[in-house]
Length: 310
Image 1 (cartoon, helix red, strand yellow):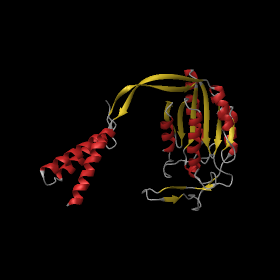
Image 2 (cartoon, rainbow, N blue to C red):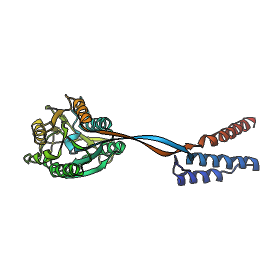
Image 3 (spheres, one colour):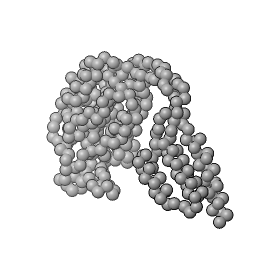
Image 4 (cartoon, rainbow, N blue to C red):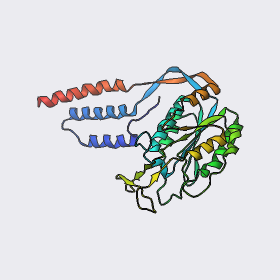
């Protein structure tokens, strides 16, 4: 037997005690009240009993997918597919990639002031989606300007480790607007090439650029991000030269996500990476809450009838 409460047990226990303290007049009425509260408490537990075994088909893909995601303030610029935030496009496109490459092990690296491995290798696409969905740039006063070089060493070391594991080919999706604002010069990413079998550099933004808003410090709206030098609305523009240089170094394609598509790239990866499917028998469970719902419904109908008679 197993339980999967809808409301935490302790919360439901408090609610039940409060309901029982509201004691009704009459012994029979109070007994019915106790039974109703007990049934509600048990239904909330979502009790399930063993029900034989079920066959589950697991699919794996001999592939490692490394997402390298630019998490700097410029990714909030609103020039993706009209006037949407670049990060909205990133979230949507990453979800498409994980769905199309279902069964592959995915990792997520983010970079802003520093590079961080946010998600170790996993086939749990929901977890990967959650990690990317919850990414948000650091506050303006913490930001030190954008440098694509921040991601270089971690990408190389992660790709090298993935290649040495020899559990599949390594595919990289480097996601950025290509903008460098800290005065640094783009360094070479060629050392990653020998560990990477495919993927793409995905560019977000336009040459006209977009203004940026960020969440208000107090969480009650948005505020425009201004250029600290001019005090006018800051505008971020895509730098495709940097993105194309990274793509050339690694030996993968560059795609402007406002104009292009990665369907062909994903199809090539699916052809290139072997898939395996296996059937696994697991213990099955059957919910029994509806058996408890029937007497609860009958009791509630009876209570309504009693109230109308008064």
